[in-house]
Length: 237
Length: 257
Image (cartoon, rainbow over all chains, first blue to last red; front, side):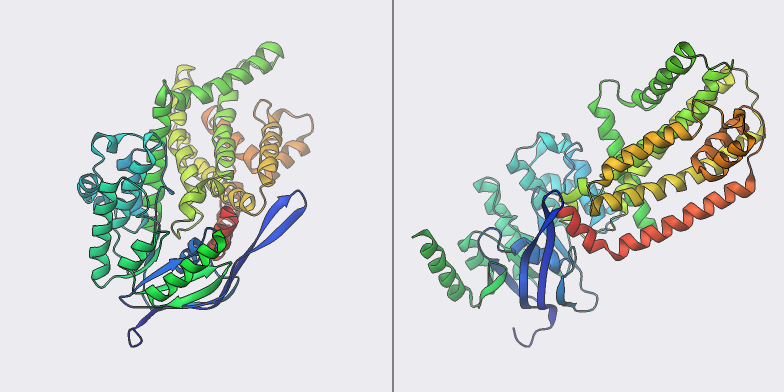
């Protein structure tokens, strides 16, 4: 990967924020501290770590949703990125169909283009008649299907994937994994957050392990995963 | 994102939201005109039946002031939590934060078109002559729209930084309701200097009076003051929008933390 083009680079990136604990008082949370990271063209980078270790935040920084408190994020010219997450971002009172149109438009499609994807989305998500029901009536599995499918239509240079393969029934999970694999095998650059070691092992070229806001390990998938697993089992004792 | 894309997205989201909103209620779209009418009804009861408003045209007078005021106050109040209320979407995609209050503004705008039509029908039923001067409603409503955009963006941004502003915005709406000449006529005050002061320095009072002058009394509004108000609110809107765009990532962090 060393000779591939660097798409995105995090240089000593830290992020902290103030949150109110009680009236007149604020606490500072350090979500990430001095993180260095390079993402090369065509690679699939996995990010692992326990809950609250900063995985989602690092994706949000990469997507440009957050800016770093200190440090720099360097993006190659003209590189677009999109963050795929499940469930969040839907308007519960709108139908799955309307939500799908809005998702497409928010990703830069015109209304007509977004509507052109509707049949494909309906077909892949297998939502049937529920597609025209309000999303608030959906089960979490149905939301996950809609979320994954609307996300799948995005065509961006860097795909930032946050746990989208972790919900839904076994049948849909398999189908989603297959579709994701097809994207990853191609030229797509992907950053992939997951709690599933098996998914990380089967999809990623390289892994970063985040622990308590810092990078605890980085490199070959097998090596970092085994370090992480021995850390997790030591926590359990 | 181009400006056209931006406004298409605002328009689509506002239409979808209105559709979903109408589906929530048994009476659906009827509420668009029923709710403002009930507001008018409450005020009419208090100020004409309980207290004596002492003017024959009070119902029409009240409607010309109250209906546009409800447009303003409801939109600004609804926009206050527009950014913090959309944290889910904000954590997912980097879009201009002005879009969230703008969607609420356009929801209000589309409803208000129906409300204005209702107002015209009432005026005609009460034998007010339809003249070319009624066209002044368009620039008056445009300046009011700018005023609404300006206050909605500012409110949504401030609430994002400090949630306490939500309470202050509620209080400000009550203050404006009493000071903008909705159920009383700024032109009937004993002190002409006070009339002058209110119409000059309270833009909302000026606009509401403008609707009445045009629709009820066939008088065109003070063009100079209308232009000044339009320019002032236009410029402040641009400045606030610029600040919000520049601090988009900070606003996202504030909304999500």
